[in-house]
Length: 381
Ligand code: UD1
Ligand code: UDP
Image 1 (cartoon, rainbow, N blue to C red):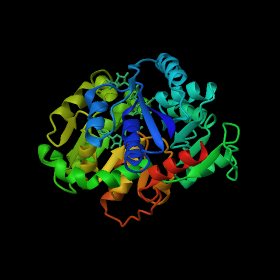
Image 2: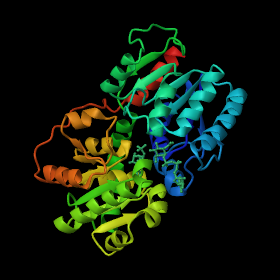
Image 3: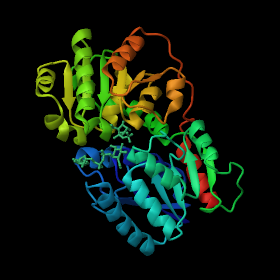
Image 4: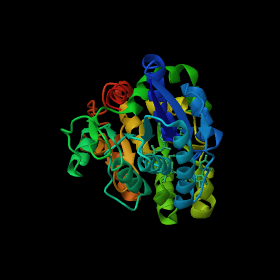
């Protein structure tokens, strides 16, 4: 029996972890024992607890209650507490997801005391080091022992950075293994999409018609913290909603919600609040989110996860960032990068609104990425 410690903390990591926990419970319970450590980076019920309840994730064995703070403070607090747990639990490996401060803290704590790091969602690059996530993912990849990339482009990035695609076992941090294995988020979307249909009534709650609304999310720090960008984004959404008479639903991340009053122009905020078609709500549950993704007309987002989920549900996506790590979405024509530029957002909306046929190739695996990862952890560590 191998003992693994899984680090989660931010909303998307809790969701991603559901796929691995499900695979362990169903197929590998006699070979893998998982201890879940929640750093507490996200702590509101609708950013954390709701996903445990809804996705059947075992409750966390430890909650570090790191909470919000500057990068240094938040990461340091987690690092210290994770190290204590590793020394006590002596696991065979540590699993981390994605690119948040929780990922970085886990990777540093484990690698320094020679616990092999398994990085799920390895190799993704925006080539923009002003993003905290780019720093986190590069640092994490370079101390990991098993690196699982969801995409071919992620795998290729690792090869370009010097990882050996032909490395042979035994694997260590100095002789890591890299894999292209598909996306655990795709596993989840497939698994939960029918359940979402039966268990949620979000469309009727917000009077949204199937195929007749835009789903938007905005939470990236460079969008929320820079007033010009936030105004440009909300201005574009408001204008599209008014001119096209189309509903927009925007489940708002708490980071963005807290900055609306200070960073958004008061007149714009008023006009949005007086527009019955612009529906701003709090963060929704995962099942509600995939029901929205499944039935919207189009997605506008700066989220990494939501870009891909739009693709899984065959919806075009406008990416409200200067670039994306998920380059295949743009290359195949399913998504367009517009940054926070109102003109580019309008042009992208017009492009997709014409209803041109889009291809959605199987870039993200076959829905069994989590099983592949479990098998390799059991075999290699
Ligand atoms: C973090 C990740 C980001 C990821 C996002 C997913 C880092 C550096 N960033 O960004 O990569 O895309 O999570 O959602 O790790 N807040 C609450 N309640 C909560 C959580 C946060 O009110 O439960 C507010 C706090 O004011 C906090 C702010 O949101 O200061 C930002 O939270 P934080 O976890 O630092 O970063 P995110 O923007 O959520
Ligand atoms: N999500 C959710 N409710 C919301 C917004 C997002 O359940 O109100 C889910 C979404 O379906 C996806 C994940 O959260 O699975 C993406 O997380 P987020 O956008 O916070 O972070 P990112 O992927 O950009 O790191």
